[in-house]
Length: 306
Ligand code: PAF
Image (cartoon, rainbow, N blue to C red; front, side, top):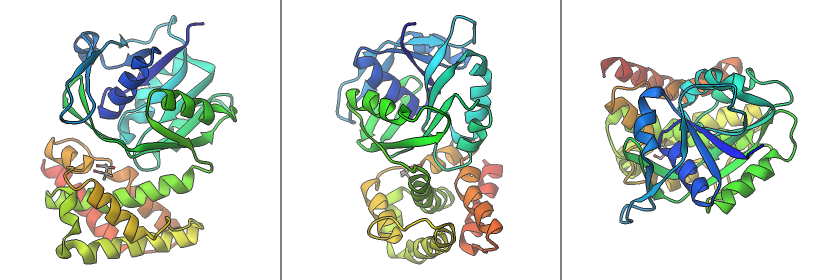
């Protein structure tokens, strides 16, 4: 059987991984909505950094499941809220030993997808810090180099994480196996639960959160997160959580967070998979997280307004 790497989702991360893998000579096939297929068939453009010239990369494109499509290697790169629904559409094409790598922000979507799979199909979850954005549909800019930390979420194949790591490494992306992966996903969720809603509600770039004005809120949000971490037995990131959040604020200072971009574009945000997951965990532990709850409500209100 021909080895094809399938990528479901043509957002910035989906296109970044698809083009990087295709450039190493792998056969890559994008699974997209019918309305996007025609344009993507003409090629994807990739710019490695904002000053770089755009390179056109060709990949296969499919928009309808069929019996000839056998998906053994899949990167699931949709938004968190669409992951399970998108996979359901292609589920009949998955092989019995499929190995699926999820790149979603937050937590919650991994369990939704795991529920759709058999024990022989393996699910891997990743925490991604690559900076990428679409300048227009089908045109991705790799604005900041980050890394992909990945590990097994569920399923049979013990070496699947190592196999995906070597594929991504060959494609020039920094990737490493981290097991167990759940604490890493909680650390990423923590950073997102501070930066994303604050920037979305206030309409500011990430860097603005480094000012004095936002320090008390950043610290209060981190303190609430640490109460949950303590009860769940999750260690603080090295150097402390406030420090980790401040580092990300500074290293992504010019970014408009994904949640701010969603609010501005009138799209549903990933708040339920970030702060929503945190609040659910807190509720089960009988903890009240006032600052996160207030921000959660403010994002929900902003979603309604746009
Ligand atoms: O969701 C995002 O925008 C990113 O994960 C982060 C790290 C907040 C940078 O903008």
